[in-house]
Image 1 (spheres, rainbow, N blue to C red):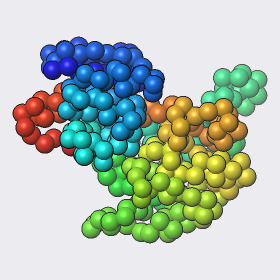
Image 2 (cartoon, rainbow, N blue to C red):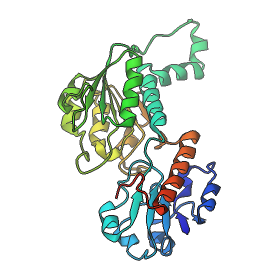
Image 3 (cartoon, rainbow, N blue to C red):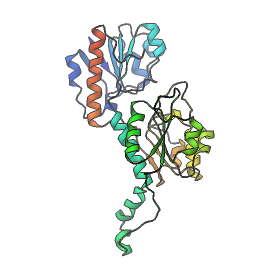
Image 4 (spheres, rainbow, N blue to C red):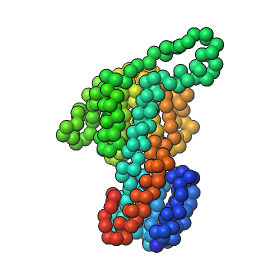
Length: 315
């Protein structure tokens, strides 16, 4: 079996990929530019990716390809319709980063609601020592207890975030396209109007692309904390940046972008240095423990496919 890994650098250079050699002959590329994808997978039976885009253009000549394994939960970078028609199986990995993404979501909220960047800078700069005053309580910060936390997308990650939010005393509001019995589900407009914190955990697909548009952002509270750890294209990024600059939302935390890394002309460049903004480089999924779990699951997916079993199939 010939296995090709196309973008190993996106898994982290500290992740040991040697277990793949126990499954088959493995070729590892740190990064693969779009114009080299077709060439590098031309004789592969199994292709492992994280961010590389695979579609008819680069898959058509891969006559030996049987299986695509995605080192992620999201699979919007793979043309699954084409793979289905071509008889190529596609597997993702589910659940490996649930606690990790929830952890970053809550960390962003807690940093922003406590105004930690401003308070730590006050001490770091020496201003605290120079002040001669034993404490500082400006800018004003608030308790999370008693706040309404809106969760958009209520899968594994959304549910974990909800559990943590409730443990801190928050009331949950949940939006999902198919309301879940027992969950505090509301329509999206209600969630946007009433929530003090909003976090997004929905996958990107035709139904969620642009879901949080300018109209929904305009409904939000002036001091809302908005967090997106799902996919950048679920939101109108320009509208978010404008609302933040104009003081129409309180704070913004984002780990995902419609183009990654975002370009020099991206609207977030105008707000990235503001103290009420927390932007991270799509790292919420990637603790060391989560990446080890992810690789282990990919190996299990390969074994299941060759054993004639359907495991984590999304084709």
